[in-house]
Length: 486
Image (cartoon, rainbow, N blue to C red; front, side, top):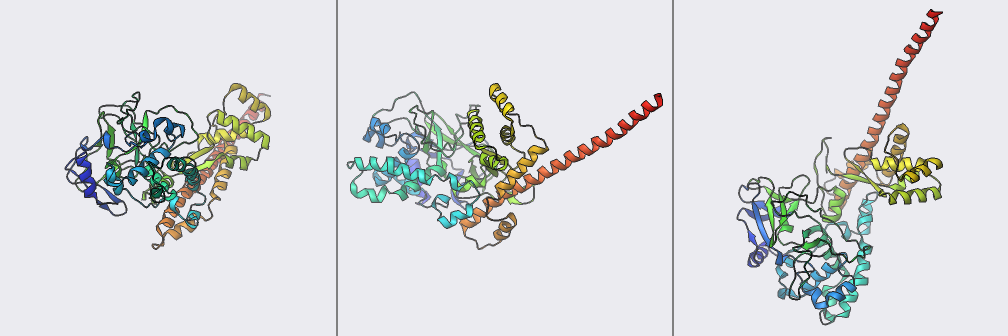
């Protein structure tokens, strides 16, 4: 990464404006971030970013040089492959690219699991992280889309530059930059056709963070982090697009700490304080209060904050539970399973349910369990009514839920006690420490959820016993009354 002063010089020379209350510095454990140089009131504009310097498939001239018809024919507009190629090509242009200083400022190495060794990835066994890395999909797009495009245009991609700027390794780096630093930005005019000599900024797919509408709007923001979906072959343009946003991407994020947010205007984007910020405090943007599993996968860090239980961790941690676990516990007939799972998905059910830190049994899981337990007659009636079973909980359902949680917990190769003891070792490598923190957070949720289920069962048994104790004297009194009448 280049010196921040060079980036700021370029930013301001390109039409950007930075308020005197904002500075950039290194924060222990967070890396480079923004700091308040003086007290900042709520609603204060921290900096403005001209739309022309956002880096996207519309602001880069590469798609037009290739030809927009050819670009779309090669499906470069689907997923992130197009913007990755634009970033590679702009990097290859060196100082002649208007983004050269910006691209030099971006990180070239990452602590995300995408770059971990196989041995390190074993530390994430049991979590959902490894299954979401998408490394194979990325390599498929590189070989099937990007490389053929590069090789077909030696006038734009000279042969000698390919092993320098267009390698699989660089493809992964650019993808990680997008995943960790891009924003979803509303198009300036979704109906406007691109012009040959330029186009409105930010009109491709995908993002990592979100942007609100103009400051005076009250509607909900468009949520970010809609990662590439290469299974979608539709050509319909989206009103939002992924863009690399200089300066805005330098703000760090932490659970529940957001005090600034990016808003879009017609000509620029503005980072605005959403709370008052004291001099010396870090200026935080948001990633959406994600669990540690997602923070690690996307950004290469985890949050360790005080929890209500007295432990340290991420209040947003969750555990993902596949529908396969319900099937494995209930063991219904294979034909029955397929028909019912297919119908469940058609009804809008998910194949993965989420157990959150509030430990409430997911209603979707209860409905799925009840669906798999239906008799043939009940199943036919449910299909006729076109409704999945209601998420009604009783002790039998709680038994199944507990068995599912136990089975899910066995996916981790170590116990919670093992992990807690290991985390006390201060000499652990960073990646192993991060993996431990993710595992511990998920295991705590599962174990506490099972404890809560047991408590619910105890309460239910007490209720049954109490009702029986009340019923017995009442029945005895009834018999005595009948005896007296005789």
